[in-house]
Length: 314
View 1 (tube, rainbow, N blue to C red):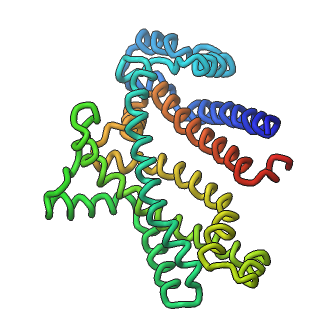
View 2 (cartoon, helix red, strand yellow; view 1 turned 180 degrees about the vertical axis):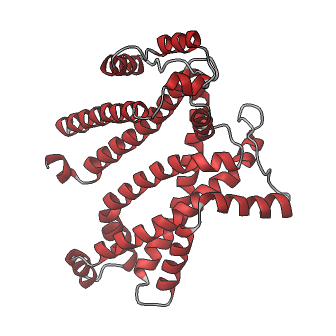
View 3 (cartoon, rainbow, N blue to C red; view 1 turned 45 degrees about the vertical axis):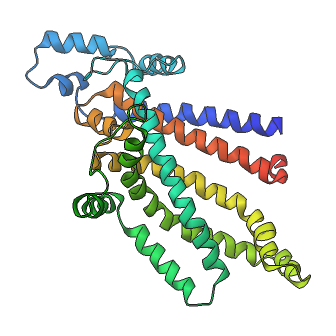
C-alpha cells in the first residue's frame, strides 16, 4: 500500500509541475507587451520600464518561471497588480466559499443521481427507465447560469423566499449563510445530477450484467442483498470516479454561478483578474484550480486502493 501511495503522490506532484508550466507558457504566449497592456498605450516609457522591472519581464522566461514556481512552493504567489496586495491574501478567504459551493452541489447531485441511476438500471426495459434517461439528458443540456436565473425568478422574485444575490458569512448569520448559498448550490447540483444519473445507470448496468450477479440470483439471495452488497459494492470504483469528476466540474462551474449570484468566491475573483489583466492573480487562481483538481484525482486514486486491493498491485 505504501508503494502505491508513493507512486500516486509523485504522479500528483508531477501533474502540478506540468500544470505550472502550462499556465506560465499560456500567459507568456499572450500577444503584446504585458506592461503596455496593464498601463495602456499612453503610458510613459519610464512607467513601462519600471513595471517591466517590477514584473521581472527583463529576465529570461526560464528564470522567471522558476522564480515564480519556487515562490508557489513557499506560499508566495506574488502581488496583485490591481489590488496591490499579496495574491494569497486575496485567494485564501474565497477558497472556503467556492469549495462550499462545490461540495454542496456535489451533495445535491449525489442525493438525486445515485438513487435515480440505480433505480433506472434496475427498471431497464420498463417505461420508467427511458423517462429517467430523457429527463437526465434534458437536465444535462440546461446551462447552470440559465438554471440559476430561473431559480432566482421563481424563489426570489415570485415567492420571495430566498435572496436573489449576495453572500452572508457563517460567522455573522448561520441561517443567512445557508439561505444565500441554497440557490447557487441548487443551480450547480441539479445540472451535475443529470450527468451523474446517466453515468450511475451505466455503471450499475455493467455490473448487473456480470456472471457473479447471475450466480447470486441463482443462489436465491434476497434482491436487496444482490443489489446493495454485490452490485453496488462492485460499482463503487466507477461511482467514486464519477464523483471525483463531478467535484472538478462543479468547482469550475462555480465560476459562472458565482457571477450570477454575486458571491465573492474564486470565480468572481478570476473574472476580475482577467478583466484587469492582473497576471500574478490570474496565475495564482489557475494554479489553485489546477492543484485542487490534482488533489481530487489523488484522493480518488487512494480510494481505488482502499475499495479494491487488487489495484494496489497493478
